[in-house]
Image 1 (tube, rainbow, N blue to C red):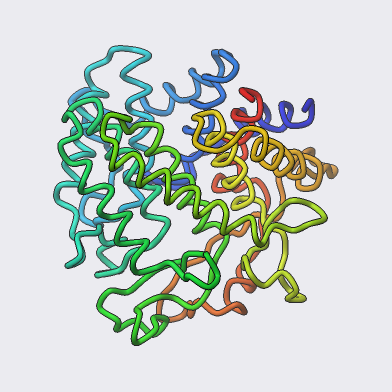
Image 2 (image 1 turned 30 degrees about the vertical axis):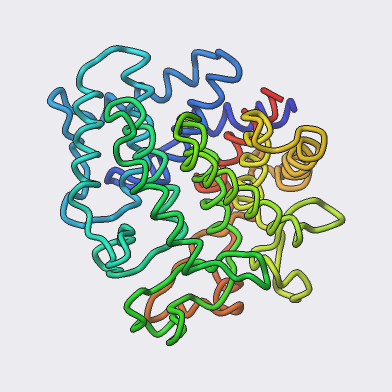
Amino acid sequence: MTATNAFIRRYLKDYKPYKTYWNYEDGCVLKGCMDLFAATGDPAYRTFVLDYLYRYVAEDGTVVNYELNKYNIDSINAGKALFFGLDETGDERFRKAIEFHMQRLREHPRCACGNFWHKSIYPEQIWLDGLYMAQPFYMLYETRYNKLANAADITGQYANVRKYLFNEEKQLYYHACDTARVQPWADKETGCSRNFWLRSMGWYVMSLIDCIDHCSEMLYEHYRMLIDLFREAVRGLLRYQDADTGLFWQVIDHGGHPDNYLETSGSAMVAYAIMKGVRLHVLNEEKYLPIGKRIFEALAERKLITDDTGLHLCDICAVAGLSDTRDGSVAYYLSEPRVADDSKGVGPFMMAYAEYLRA
């Protein structure tokens, strides 16, 4: 894994914030650093996270570049690093900033079924992405500060996702659901989008295993429900794993499509979730650890590419969403550009590497 180490070192050394405002993409890299610090003890990862946090978190706990009026669930993701900052330094600014984020969740608009909207510009919509952005933060907050009083709210949102977004025949989850059933991409009867996008399911399984990690086994019914959903989702994904490489397709169930490709970010997310599931004794080690390790090894072998500028992590879907101009068709998902070294791919790759090392 010499190449993997070299790539991550160079990537962090040259890293620039993904956006000018507090964003989930940077949060993915922070989470990767936190996991690698836990796996290796290398202080460089700790320093990266703390330097980032001190740049943006004021002494009173406010986040200076947080988009307060956007009600964007993505903005919660980087807040997970605040728990790390507090544990590592004891600085009360991070405790205050955790409350700042939790207040954003308390104020966040919800669908009639109880789930958080994805964003104010996407009203009444539940996206798989949003589960990863908010629920692990919410569960960790409940565990540490609220005696899990709102655990039923968290698991209830997962129950709604299972109810509204799961396809029994495919054993996969649609990318999103418009509960108002008015969006042009939404099915008029179910409200669901049309296809199964790999990274959205990657967000989903990562969200589940991270919530399981933070949830107390004493809350048996909630804990058991999350585990059952996680196992079901992993089994569903593995039906579509590419036999030759062990990786997964950008549009999960269209492996034979001539324009489809084995996508890096979602594959890394699945690898992370499976290996962490084994570590938490949620998945059988003998069966699943070789699967998780194979996915990561294939990414390191096939997607870390050297050119005249150095090592790059390739075949990351730049972005995909649903809107008036993004219809959720197979052609749409395959039309979005493939990029290298995007934090949405590198962050999960780092997380998966940390689990690989811990295994």
